[in-house]
Image 1: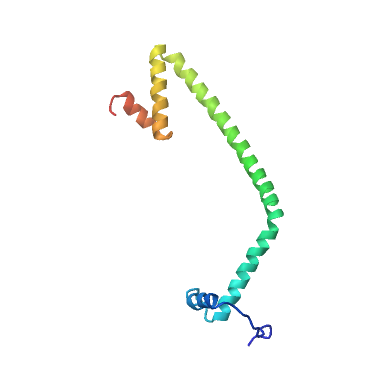
Image 2: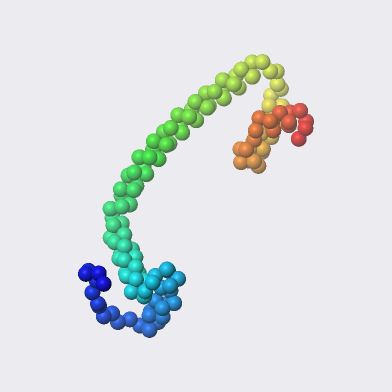
Amino acid sequence: MDENRHRHTVWMDDAVWDQVESRYQRDNCSTRNEFIEKAVQFYSGYLDTESADAYLPKVLADILEGKLGALGKRIGHLLFKLSVDQNLMGNVLAAGIDIDPDELRKARVRCVKEVKETNGEISFEDAVRYQKGAE
């Protein structure tokens, strides 16, 4: 027997003891004492986290705010770059293509509908098939 282990008398309801009896082997414990010891350690850890709630959420919030702020800034830069490239492509295409303003409005309405229906999952190949009439 380990030097740090001592016998203690603990009183508990029969219903609680029945729970120990029915569950200690399910938890791969070789003895009821091992199960009870694990249960006390688990519950003590639970209580410790309740007292840490004044500290941990503040620390976690600060860390998350920093990480998410950096991510938001990076995504903002990438979206700006993408918008510039898309604007450039639109201007190049508009300079070389003669399209009726009414056709352009109809195409925009159709594109908005397609993006909503597919959650933006439209490939260039899908657009080519549509334009060639091979839906």
